[in-house]
Image 1 (cartoon, rainbow, N blue to C red):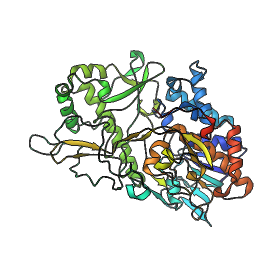
Image 2: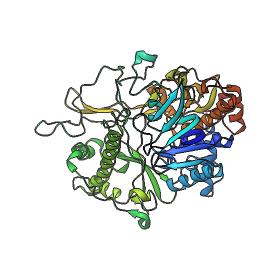
Image 3: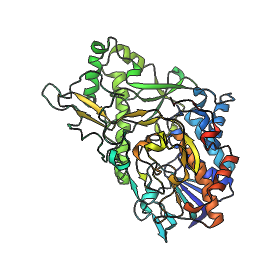
Image 4: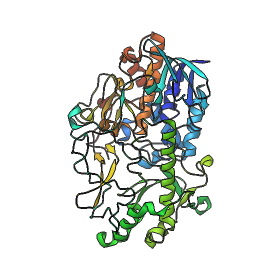
Length: 513
């Protein structure tokens, strides 16, 4: 049995900062990571950091990005590109941070799928990993994207979309209009024999504003390079099937007639430059790296189901780029442009240069001491227990691709609405007191789908991780439940370590990018 003050489950960027923060407060911290790497999406392909307004990002999150910038000889974070760095550089920084403060990091330690959490009197006493090891602690933090520890602890959670009526959010539920990443001319959802094309659901759409259990699209954020000396050509996937891209083939074949020009790389992806002739490739357009409709069962899936979804997303991504780079139906100018890029030979060495982290944009969401909602991003933007700030726009990706009554295809679910800077309450990290009193949840935090669409950015996960580490220390030293710690002491500690907590502390502009 392994004993410590704090067990952090999940080596995401939030998990790293939670562990680092707690260790700096003098706690003995064990960080358990189910896989082989630290940093989650920060080191798994999301190098084009989702920022909003730079000035609201403080504390250890800012320290991390400053260290990354300094690696490239930069001495400020005043420009967007100064926040962009390579995955292998970022992971090295995270590893050193943990080593410097004595965090005990254990890889390949996955929570036992069933009966992995032992609890008594609303307190977790220990957790058990797949290899049978037991880990005891005074406080636990679930910093995974999946929230498996939280779920097994019996904490209430949801996934999918609330309805408009649930919290009075006019952005909630099924979207009546989805203008972004959309087909801009009628594209038929059927082949010549009137069979539904692959990657299209028959529909119909549910009523606008209604809730559901559907989840926004996941993808892999690729790090590609156009440096010939570091470039690996896109290989043919083991289970490649070009027929799955019939919709993309049709879209590309009709593009020039409807747009007046040939399609280019930016019509199907969104490359953002990072150092050393590389780019972070994200989704863009109606058919892209977003694997729409294939993430729905991930949040509550078994370990085997989650792995199958992960593997299917990887195969889709590999096939997508192989199709663009090799299929004869792809317009020649686009294909030439795609083939100027390739996998980065010096990234993701143990996963054949494909990212080691699936972008789980949203899974389970705790229903905790306070549920953050749309109003907290737009109107009620100050909080008495603020632990940090957010400013990135409400950003949720498409959720489903269905047929319209006229037989054309449409994407549904994308939300892109600017917000002004807002304060994040400590209460979104804590379960209801009656459920669990020594658990903190900085990633699968307590928010509606719409509020989570802004909160889910990696700098905010890191900001909340810093607060979770300090809160764990205060809880242990006072003997109080995590819900009852003195918030004034928490805020004082965060301030002393560079955190930005209140609107009054920063000069802000009218809206985020």
